Every structure is written in C-alpha cells, then in structure tokens.
Image 1: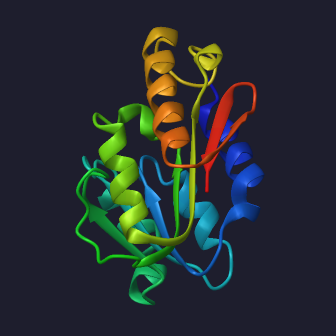
Image 2: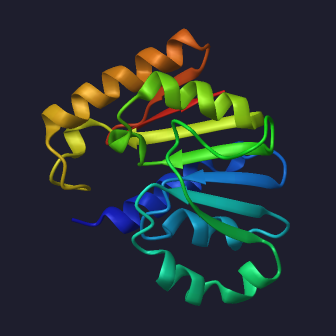
Length: 168
C-alpha cells in the first residue's frame, strides 16, 4: 500500500481551499499533513490526535517550528476539543474521519472551532487494500455517515475516485 504518497496527492488537491493562517489538522497520524502545511509560509498549525502515538518523533522532527510557535501538537479527540470558538480559520481532516466514532458530534465541534473553512477528505470503499488497510465495508459505513452529516450541515460533497471531499 502507498497510503503516504496518495495522502500527499490528496493534500495537494485540496490545499488551495485553505483560508487564513490558523490551521487545525485533525488526525496527526504519521505527520504527512503537518509536513505539507509547514512547508507553506505563514501557516500556524495545531494538530490533534486522540492517541498521539507519533508525537515524540514529530516533536523532534519539527523542533524549530514548535519553538517558533508555528506548530503545536495536542492529544485530543475531534468530538470534544479544548479550543475556543472560532480559534482556527481552517480545519483540515485528511483521511482521519473513518476513525471517528461520533461523526455528527465531530462536525458540530469542528464548526464551533472554525471561522472560515472546513475540509474533510476520506477514503472511498474502492480504495480498501490499495491505499489503506481498512475494509470496504468499514469505509462504506463511514463514508455514508460522513456524507450524510456533511449534507445536513450544508457542505459541498465531491467524489474523487479513491477518496471523497466534504467541504464548506
């Protein structure tokens, strides 16, 4: 599986949607999105992950950006975040929502902390076993929930083949 290279491609396809300079990255994972965001000038990033399993390595890798205040890593889940209302101009969640247990609550919370733009992408069931290790059944259930919650909240929905985009 080449999930990392496909994630970079997805990020490249949605990067133009980012507004403002205060960015929340939902689902730190390996840090692929963080890396791409920090390569852009002027963005300040907070990245959250409920497990924070790679934070030690990322703190070492991005020591300078953390010291400069351009990056903050927080152990937190998306359904209940420790941030102020409208603290971020853009929230971006690339391939992380299939791990979210309460998708409607996550949408509500993201909208609470975001002032301008929300960008959510995730894997289509056809990508199962090709770009990610998740089953098509699991991805299909999550896709249906994500798209349903997005539609209810007035988000744009775009099918992209192996992945889909929900944004507002």
